[in-house]
Image (cartoon, rainbow over all chains, first blue to last red; front, side, top):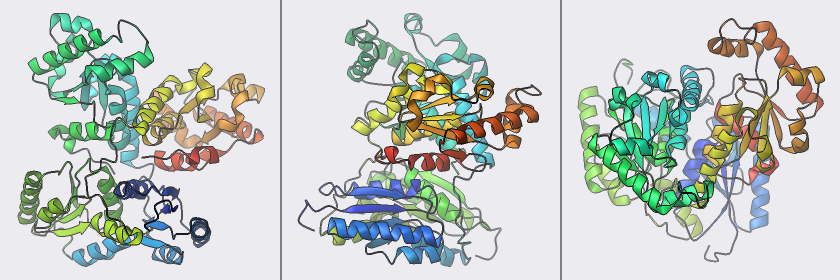
Length: 277
Length: 277
């Protein structure tokens, strides 16, 4: 396909939510910057009828686009996968090929039952819900008396990315993450807020470039002292000095995504055993 | 491997956060219920040196376990992937094989640059942060005056799963999801809270089995009227009747994960264009 103006549709097909295949598909297609295909996720393909309907949609896209679509699939049931493969498309199977190789490695058969990797009502599920409630309870310095239950406590200046990171750690991994803002009083004293001093091994510092912090705060409180570039510079410099002085690990969120920041935090030894299911 | 007591380690290797390959790996290994391998995610393998260190860890696991480990990898750089393949393990490549097939389908070369699929500072990133702030602002019936900015408004009885779902929709997809509790006053009047009446096309109902709601509320407020099974039955029945009467779509969260509930909600036509990046 050298005519790059040709339209192309990518379908992400799953018997579950499709989140895994969608993430894999986005990474794969990001490798082809020149082509921007339309991306369609079709979740819950868990019956022959739903597979047949999906095949119809895919074949329509072929006719509409003038180029056969790309299918990425994580279907577990070989029968349903077989139906999908009848579509007029490039079919990329992201499940069966690996299952076969693992089967022969382990000398075991896979169950081939559509597993629900996010299934509710298991221990991990309750742990995640519990962690979300915890993150909300202990957001922005609230819930101080619950800090002994924290797996990790994020500290840093206001609006440096603490809350989204805590919520992500909770939702994705069931990690109980509290967050506590560093404020001008802490900088004047050049010491940690009293509440935090007993939990030094749980602390993780976030920081951010003053320019970016300024832009974020401007949106929230335009032209305030709080948002001014001078104040942002002062707060960031003071927070970094304090965090370094206390020998607390520190990560700059400026050019990192929530996922990247969370992954760095998760490398802490005490969090490593906390695995997503 | 018929001796099922043999230990086996699975490594999930990525040049980024490893979240995608970890999710894929968990789904794949869930197919082998009999064997419970130890799972280790090694993120940020983005240099020959970090790859060599990972190979060492993997080879140590081989010696320790007495069975070669399984590697699942989404490495983009063929050179770094080449180093990983030297490990004494079953190497399952979840990236290159698909890239090659897409390259030949599109008659284009992939960039082979480690893409950061969660990269910060792009539009989607700001949209997600914005959506998280929105979900927090409009949680539990707060922020009524901002409801016209909602993409979706979840309604249902207290503790049926609205908040985690809103946060997931925000974090994963940048969807602005508000939530609004249905309370006894609404049931008496058998009508929607006034605030919601102008936004009927944005509403989505969540419900839950009374038994499970009772257990969840018991943990929060043990032996309260609020948590009593009779009250839970009454609230759920009334909420379902109201939601049905108003012809609002409804989903039962009892046996569904946050991901599954979010995926169903995302099928609403007005949300379909909101894609994760």
